[in-house]
Every structure is written in C-alpha cells, then in structure tokens.
Image (cartoon, rainbow, N blue to C red; front, side, top):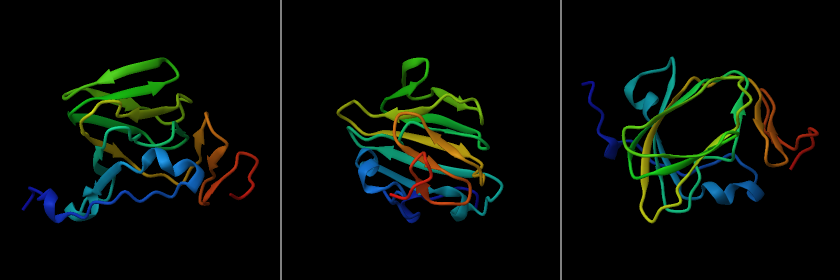
Length: 148
C-alpha cells in the first residue's frame, strides 16, 4: 500500500556530528521514509524540530540537491542572503554546489515539521561557520583534515 503510517517508522535524533557541534541538533527528530517505502533513488525524511533546535549546522553540498516543504509550525531559514521565515506550504530549494550555506532553525515555542528531499551523494559537504568539513567518503573532520 502506498500510504505510509508514520507511527510505524522509527524516529531518531541521531547525528554523526562531533560532540562540540551536536548540541544544536539534539531537538531534531527525523524518520527516513525511503527505506520504509522502498524508494531508493532519492532520500526523503519527515523532520520535526523541537523549539530551539536546528536542522543541521549551516552547510552546502558539492553534489547533492536538497528540497524542503514545510508542513507545520515555522522555521527560520538562515543562508548567505540573510534570514527568511518558512511557514506551512512554503518550499525551499538548495541546489548542489551553489556555495550558499543553509540551515533551518526553530526559534518558536512550538514544534515545526517539514519534509526534506535529497539524493545522498558521496561528495564533500562544507560548513562555512564552523571548523568542520565532511570529506567525500570519510567522517567529519576539521577543515585542515585533522580528526576531532
């Protein structure tokens, strides 16, 4: 059956970030919908940000497009152009290799919920505001390549 029951799909707040950068995403809870649906050509996540939580550290991908659709609540999109409030029905697109770091932050007193779509790629991911870089095929490292 094509309809997914979200309550049957495990939710996690796991992150691969080193401890010094993980606090911002502690209140980010997500469900990976692709594996539950049999979809493998792109990734889809149902994401809830608790008040104060961020979707990630501000970042951009060399080889992965990302697309977000807001479902409930509101989040502030922070990118190189400034800050933009996203509300239910709003969409945001993040083309690969555009060099425009982005993050969604829940600055409200209520949960915000969105769907994120992307195609995971084995390419570098840049974090312009912090000393972290994801080198293709490796773990998170400092920008100079050093380990955490």
